[in-house]
Image 1 (cartoon, one colour):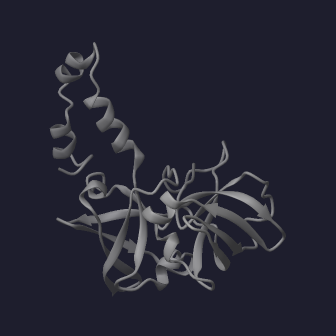
Image 2 (cartoon, helix red, strand yellow):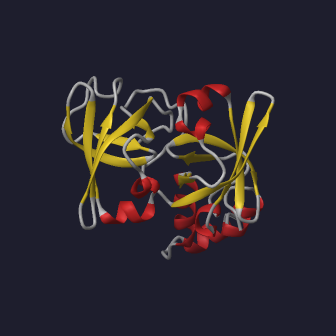
Image 3 (cartoon, helix red, strand yellow):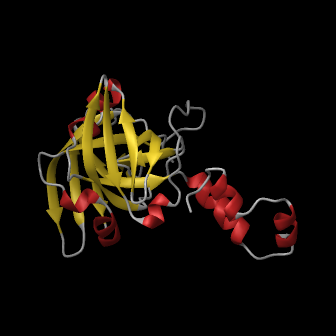
Length: 221
């Protein structure tokens, strides 16, 4: 589990491609301080397992499913990536709960600058947008952001200067692909309401339904 607060920007130094897999070696300084074999690290929001490390880099394997469903398959040596170590119990939750399991890849449709902010309009598939709600949270390349607006096929987020400087999102441009993970809370609520069981009638009597959640902005229709 992660928070969506990027700890540092790493640099992909080597990528070894297999038939349906890849091994990434990423240069880092801060996060390698207390790494252990088997630790989880979010790379552009994707939860990966550390298989080797030293004082200046770590290595992680990426399987076929991850390459197909994230933007990691498009990385080349020299590319910069967002990095975050897994959340420890007792840490401050400054962002929101992020699992590192990507829901889909979005594309930046528009980049605008407004005073100190950078506004990004990101196109996303319906199965992702369903859980993206105005003023809710979304992880973009592993960065916890607040949703400004939700459109028919896209949503808008705003980067403050700190986020623009300390994540790779500040250098993203129109056409770039980004990993998206919607807030997990909406998924659990939707699943719970749809489950069959002896308490289903009671759930209906409570007045809480998928239509109720959509009407009040918890999920999108």
